[in-house]
Image (tube, rainbow over all chains, first blue to last red; front, side, top):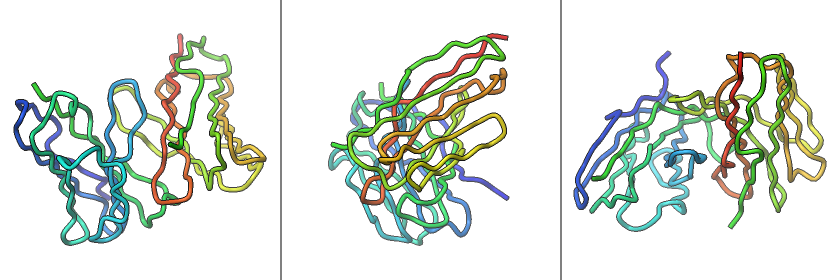
Length: 115
Length: 110
């Protein structure tokens, strides 16, 4: 079956612009996670959805970052007024259940470059 | 905040040698997961450990969870070039999110 997909695979934007990153989880997975990974580091948790609601958004760095999952499937991570420090690979993962106790399936990521 | 420390950061081995990476937390973990990320790829789940003192094996890979549930290790016997990649541990504290370690990058010389 299809795995987690993310679009676009690469995004280059200018400082100050708005970007949207999309994640299509595995069908039937109720939990969805967003992470950010900088070069040479481990994935850093951003937000976790259980169904349509954000169960834990404690990892979002500031109010420029926002994510939605309106129908409990596809999710969009939105970044306003991008800064050069936002450059990283943004990973999405989904799992059958939540709470961090299930295997997480990661997508290929979106590489965001802010110039 | 809660942190998961992983050592070493890098490891070069000759093909056929063994490899071990260690993961440490200052506070007790609910569980720990291990992932492998190939160069240019995304993390892929390897295993989850839940019980104190648990040991699990997958072919040449042996995973251990410490008695106090504060540390874990991954040992690879007789490395192969296909083992190349970065190995991450990810610990679960009370709550919903996994905290990833910084990873150990394994390089294998044929």
